[in-house]
Amino acid sequence: MTSWSGDRIRQISIGDRSIGDHTSPLIIAETASNHVGCPETALKMIDASVYAEADAVGFQLFSADSFIASSHPRFELSKQVEIAPDDWQQVFKHARERGILLIADALDDLSIDLSVSLGADALKVHTTDMANPYHLSKAAATGKAIFLATSTLTLGEVEYAVRLIEARGNNDIVLMHGYNDYPTPLEEQNLLVLPALRRVFQLPVAFLDHTLDLFSIPSMAVALGASVIEKHITLDRAGGGHGGGDTRLLDMIFRGEQEDPLNHMADSIDGA
Image (cartoon, rainbow, N blue to C red; front, side, top):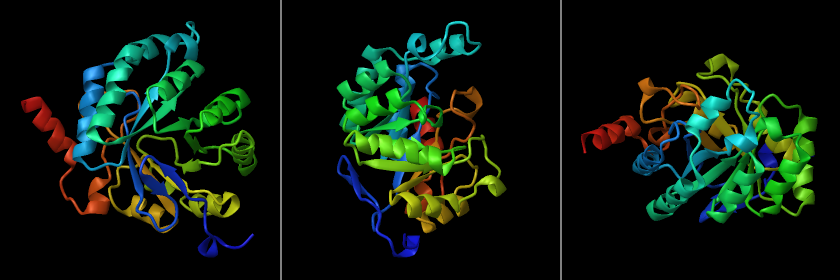
């Protein structure tokens, strides 16, 4: 197989955006469950992401009763941050009205079905489901582009997931690399995984940026071939959340802004 620098990777489309070589990086504002179960907060997070000129917003969707055993220590927390299907309908509608792509991190079968019915632009599969053939097959069968989180996995484990999805007739795959720590120390990034994944699988790669860095690390990721940058966001750094402590969006890196647009947007919302 030839080197990364001379290869063309597979080009995929999500909505009206192309992901691959010679395209601007797709910027994802990842909310996880930092809305803490409040649909109104989820709507505000969409508004903040649009204000910051992110290309897409990501949400975790799950049914606690389906996703986690009632005896698990985190069951009650999951119930608290869960958003009901009827409320998700309003969230998805708001994203469409604001013109921002929505990537659904659907954590169980019911949520995959819900995400598709509400018009998600793409699906994300967690590292913990990369060896789950049923979940992978169900996601692949939707025909939606699939973002695969590869953290902690071997190349063989990544290949298993990729080949299974391709065997189901879905070739729209993005491989996501990032160290799962909030915030991640700069020395723990291992950014050379990005060109390695590109070279081995000939697929677009994404960097899950969990650092507090706003310029150096994501810029290096793009230089090493990342076609997508994902950054966790919240409207309230002091108020906690369910998706980690890294909260800054990367819009200013690629568009030259100096001010943190999410802080500005949050202040505007609070003062409205």
